[in-house]
Image 1 (cartoon, rainbow, N blue to C red):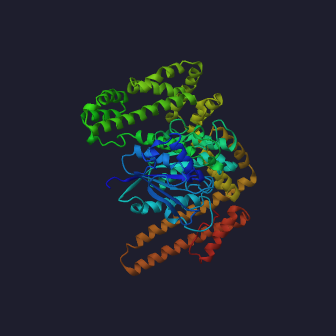
Image 2 (cartoon, rainbow, N blue to C red):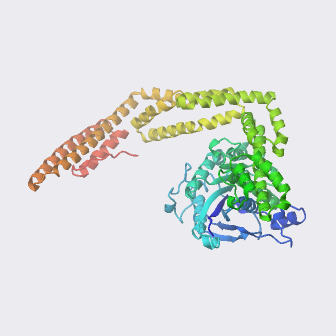
Image 3 (cartoon, one colour):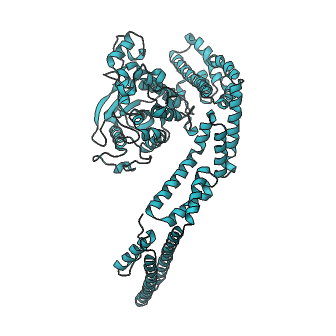
Amino acid sequence: MSKPVQVYILMGQSNMLGFGNAGGLADACKNKGLYPYLIDEAGDWTVRKDVRFVRVMCSGSGPSKTYNNEWMTIKGNIGPEMGIGHYVGHATKAPVMILKSCIGNRSLGYDLLPPSAEGYAGDPNPAKRPTSGPWYAGVQYDGDIAAAKQVLKELRKHYPGAGKYEVAGFFWWQGDKDFRNVEHAANYEKNLLCLIKSLREDFDSPNAKFVCATLGQTKKGAGGAQGQILEATLNMDGERGKYRDHRGKVASVYSHPLSKGGGSSGHYGGNAETYMNIGQAMGKAMAKLIMNSPGSVPGIDVDELDSPLKRVYKCLVSGKLNEADKSLRPYLAAAGSKKEEQVVHARELNDYLAILVEGSIEAMHGFRESGDFCQLRDELAKNDKSHSGIPAYDSQKETWAADLTTEKAIRAIAIGDKLSAIFAKKERTSPAKFFGLVNDFQKEHPDSFYASRAEAEIAPVRAAIRKVFEEVSALEKLGDLYSKFETIKESRSRFARIPEFDEANERWVAEAKDPGVRKSIAAGKAYLAVFADLAKLNDQLESSSAKNNKITRPSKRAKAEERTMASHLRKLKALAGKLEKLADKHAGGYYGRAARASFQAYTDSKGQTLTDQREK
């Protein structure tokens, strides 16, 4: 097998694990005519020999067990993997492995907390993560990753004949346990962002795609914790979400319209159609991400195409979809006069073209639905050269153009263009001033679509301010007021004129005038001055020792070294004396205690070393 196996890793909790009833699936296929690719002519379950399905499960960091290791087929209850596997199998030219590693009743906010998230209690180095022991924040993440990596380590055992693999993408369907915890629900979005980051890092796959799905019972507009989970999941989407760098890399599936009833807590009543529908949607979303990757058409070897189809291929790769369509229609119309294998390739190219066009149409509908009329306008103008002339696209074009003339759209475009003008100033504006411009925009247009986009732009600054607040609070708790106010001073140049920082800064300025605070700051300054002098003293010792080493006569060199060390120890004693006085003067204070501990360490060393003994 020359090509690396394309691995797609599925994670989540019990609904990703799978409770879709196999009997109900058989009824859906045989009596309702659904999912025809699952049943062969004899009425048996089909077996895909190009897609391998492997399922492993572990509890926390405990040992994992393999439950499935076979070519993709139905062997019992299902999760979304069947729909996922068939779509990515069609979209991927290379062999495919669907690798599921998950267990039920786990939260992203604690059990599955990734290493890049705040509060993770494992070891960021995978090699040092424990394989047994107590439960901790992130233990199930560590366990699921370790179980998946063990499968990949024994690749041939799980994919016969395979030599290499690439982790091409991740699927995530989860959230039931998190909506039961207020804090976990509130942090779900930032933890999802960390999950994407950590998965790519753990599998050394920076370009791997990521698809997540919402809980089936939650409708758009829902409030409370379930609404937070929904919004966080949809915000990941590269086309309609908050994060522009997710475009072409991350997709979200809104699963409520696909669910046949019930809720995530009851595993959707075991309805196999729910699991198949959501799986298909997730697989389709991944296929679009794969197919929209520049430079190639998945599943097609350009060297196997005849000249007309090579031109079609080049048009598709370069984005000239209308030219590809213009060439494919007469080619397929004359299929009877073409070689059979070329007709097969032409149909594959046409299927790929249809997916791209459908993706563009869905994106345009998404822009209109979300209220992003600026994007609708811009994409309509951009697509005019590449899509015009394709019937499926042209049938919608007039509707979109008419949408742009409505009062709602005109007002939204004015707001969106105003935000774009603010964004254009970012490179030549100070961070604080830029934040102020965006913040003012949000206040002026709080209910517009573009308010959330504005928030995404300044969210990193808000996060940096929160980090400063946390650091200041920690230093305050420690009693290290000198470092606290140094941190505040350094932060002013970055965050001055940002309301939430300025509000806190007013309190800090007033606090700094307190005589007790000023005394503590002075103590810190004096303490650190001692250790700044110590650093210089050590440099001098190193320099003098280097000079002494150049003396060739041993007796002369020994005397020089003796003089150097004696001088060094005298000066060291003087610095230690300063610490002793500082300890007496500020007894009970943070730096008084540090000075006392440092002086005691000096005494214990018999006057040979002086070290900083501050509490960290």
